[in-house]
Image (cartoon, rainbow, N blue to C red; front, side, top):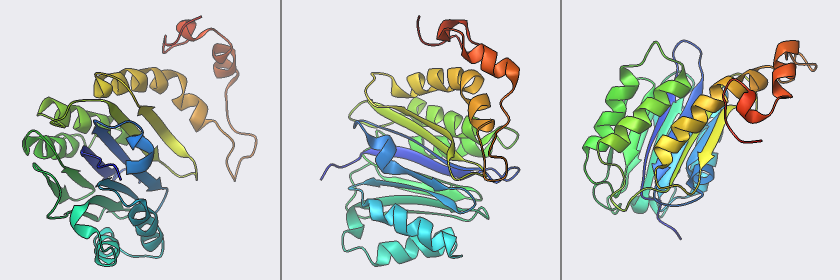
Length: 245
């Protein structure tokens, strides 16, 4: 089993109710394993020696009405490998919880507050976690995706994973059953910086598309003629100026 030596943050936007997770680590593929979220329910980060069912079961418990704290306590209590697990959870009401087993690799720890939980293991220093928390808490006027990105950037600037850099990811859900944001960098020497670059391209090119997709209430969607015309252009000629031709 691979240890995901990681720093992550789960968060909720008090204005919109959006829920999300951002993560960075020195392992490929961590975005899909660490980040979990369900609209109207909660968000979870599972890491260190991860048990993915802690995230799956945690979301189920929150969907049944459990708080993040109660859901985390339940899944950890029932896991015989709890001492090598690390978890962060936030629920749809803004309740949060974080857990670090005593056998996680130094430096490890977490901090949580209203609407967020930040945690990390095998870090250069504990300031990584406190920097993420401070960045998130100072961004109440920002969209959740931007708040999570700034928290991740602050964590990297404060030290990050002591083994190095390789992977980062961002997951945000809004009202629909599909994500508003689902971005991943799986092999890059500067994954957080690369995630930021992709985020800025996606903010202009992808986000309007996702926001206009068909929904249960509106199966036709709401994509504008202007967006459709722009999307027919080569990527470098679109607003985000990404890709190639």
